[in-house]
Length: 377
Image 1 (tube, rainbow, N blue to C red):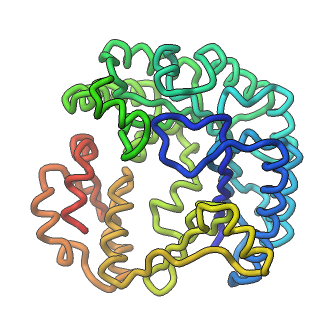
Image 2 (image 1 turned 90 degrees about the horizontal axis):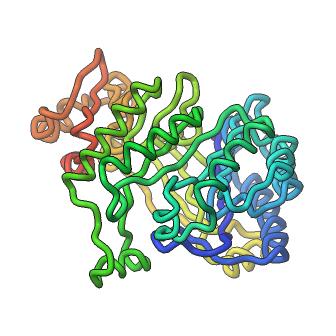
Image 3 (image 1 turned 180 degrees about the vertical axis):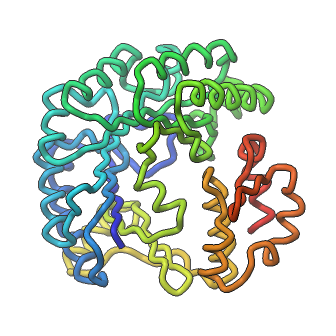
């Protein structure tokens, strides 16, 4: 396996819409966690079958940009020592605009990071307040410009749409503001209300009104139109890229390829024998105890058979514009996807497009992806 995900579970404060594993952390907490990651990497390398050098590394969270450049450099040095890092590896850091400075960004570049995923989320100060973000729109734009000055030539910007009270005109304005910055990559997510989050509780109590399905669809179509006109490829349900700037790490997931993982709450995947998915517990105390005993803290959470592997292959591939490769499917599973999933394809036929030997959803299919993909599961 040539990819690894590293979870950093610390945030300045928890956003009210977020259900990812994260918690507040002092500088001493973060320093101790970096040492924990070093040990986690060593144990993982001990238990892993030697493979090719790492070609993608992704620091996610949480807020990885709470780490200092020297701490990230320490982690990268440990990865290189245990696994080797390919010369042109894509090394991504998720960053919150409220936690970065020009000096810090310059340090990240010097440490070896070459891709920045900047969580702008909105360019409306009112919406940023609603979302509980620690930055405002001016800070977001200044952060992007600072990243450019620091030498980042591969920047992804995250933006949310379908926010409460957000009109089609508001969405149009924000998307154009984002496109004016000309990032290499854009991730655009419709706000989701996850069970148990403060934002969901506010919606359930009537304090705010979620976006209607009709307006959600109109905003999504508008985003697709504006991004395509600006030269971006809509290569996955929520992701757009300039030519040559797709996120290589995320494509590992969508292609159902292997990925190592370290850090509390991180998920890894081994594709051998139809596939095994495992998770490092989302509990620093448990992880520390296991590593102190020189044990791998990760636990298996799912083991696939041929049928479930075929279903997941379709589930992941149909998220992308490349779609379901019929020839590759036959090569991997020794069966024809058209036969295995004939009923599903028939029911989804109005939303499927065939290009040579691949099938992919059209834009309307992506809009109701969760409904359509259930036919394949």
